Image 1: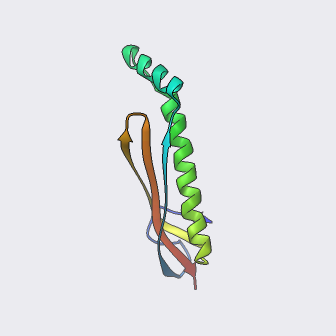
Image 2: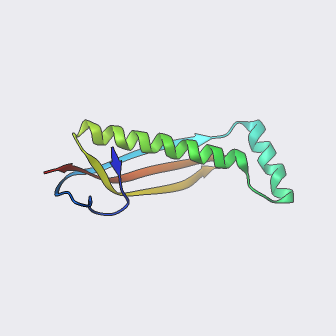
Length: 103
């Protein structure tokens, strides 16, 4: 499935099928959350949270693609990601875009 963050597919005529999205709420275990808290004292990347967000984006993207495939889409254009913190150590990631079919 072609994913683009532009609102067209270069060289293709397309028909819009509709909005598709994928969402996930992900959290880290208490041990990694504690270690991240300790890391804030000295500064630097919170690798556990980075890994959590990468994994969450992958899951959200897959769910968006699965929804597009169920609609018979060839691509998803104008792909965007959003995130929000729901509670300490947990984040929601949403991936969304427009499913399109080539003419």
